[in-house]
Length: 179
Image (cartoon, rainbow, N blue to C red; front, side, top):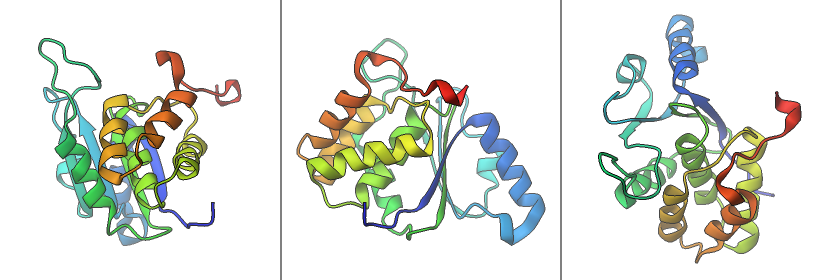
């Protein structure tokens, strides 16, 4: 892949809180310039996110891809906000994406950012999926979020096909060496 991408971290809620606390203590050199926080609606964003001085987007929906009673699904607007947020992120800039477990919603946000920096094609879709797995291998990007990103970014189904071919069967993609 010839395009230089942002420096993206995919973390869980507790790690995000710790990293943001640490950044606040160490001043400007350790700041998180871009933060995407995704929380369950009943939890809301962590206090550290609310106090974060950098660019922040805080979204609230459950980690689901199909309707169920009492579940708030991600919307097209949520993913559109991630796409718009990504527009100003420059190559090499640090971005933290967090959700409760750091596996599904945050990896879908990271995949959306990466895909937004590439020219839409089947190869770029696979490159984006490969890159998000390089960042963190124990992931399973939220399918509904990826579907919205595919449409918004003009991937013509290629991002969904790359997702389906990599994350088939609904389980987590993982490398035993990560344990």
